[in-house]
Length: 85
Image (cartoon, rainbow, N blue to C red; front, top):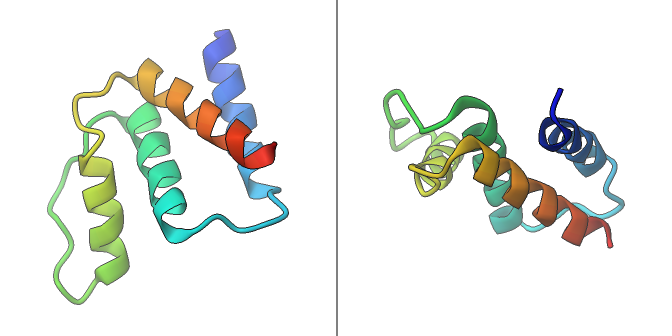
């Protein structure tokens, strides 16, 4: 396993142990970067108007479209580290 992937997985565990819950925009950014890092570009249908949370997550992930998996992983790690310190 590459160092990047190991650090990414560690950050994914570390974020669950934060003492303070991040604001909604930060949570959406974390979600989007995680999905981009693991699954690549957003796919599927955008959730309907009644699924506000699903739409927000889908849109946040869509903003990361075109970013490489490695770049998304690096950005995710940096964001998690900034929340820890």
